[in-house]
Image 1 (cartoon, rainbow, N blue to C red):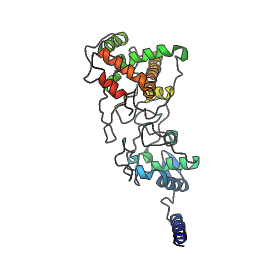
Image 2: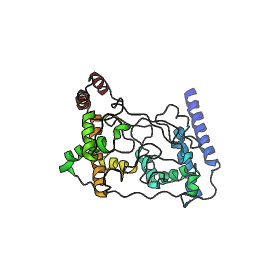
Image 3: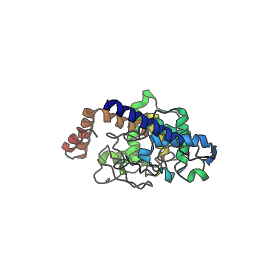
Image 4: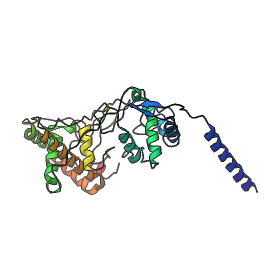
Length: 320
């Protein structure tokens, strides 16, 4: 009898709360111009409802990234009030397109608490518009224009050559090891540098097997990924890696590499090297899923560096 009474009471309370929520005053009673486009009050109210159901717990009621579940999250949830977004298909510093924001919500961000969300297209578009209300930037600026991409100039038959060229670009021209780990010995790096730039190097930074902590515009420091161990936040495939290299990561020290990977400034060579670098990064990412091969790779690298291999073996046997 008591169980039945409790069930009835709980159901009555639930229906009462639902009814109360449905009667609550909606925050928008007029359209707003956001990103240069007028958005109806109906859509914004649906976005408000969707946001509070799915997003508020991490991103906060005020969109400041300080939701009740945000404490201790690495990386921290995005603060929408700043109007800064890391990932898009637009030039660094520009506001992302609706498609960019929708893509992140749909796909999530690898290796972070930002999971993929399976919501209707109607709610997806509504919450994208509602997110814009947190920052005044959307009231005065428009979204950027997506950049254009080139086709892969290497292809499956030249994949091994592309990886080797990418290794030379990574260490010799782009010098990605200044932030990310290096995956070559100093003599190899010097040889790569001399081949692609005409000038070798005498030494590189200390602890080249580790990443170097970086600052950002988001109020948080971050560690660039070890490409053999960690996820790339917004890239899973080779074309996605290529696009991230072209675009960089907004608000961080990861630059947009387009136009920077040809000593002579040749655009065709630059794009070919961008794709080669994407091939090489992809080859490093594959080691993440094969710990035995990664251990062999790291041990061989430590031997070339002339350092003990035990540390590499231990770190390689532990998944992140």
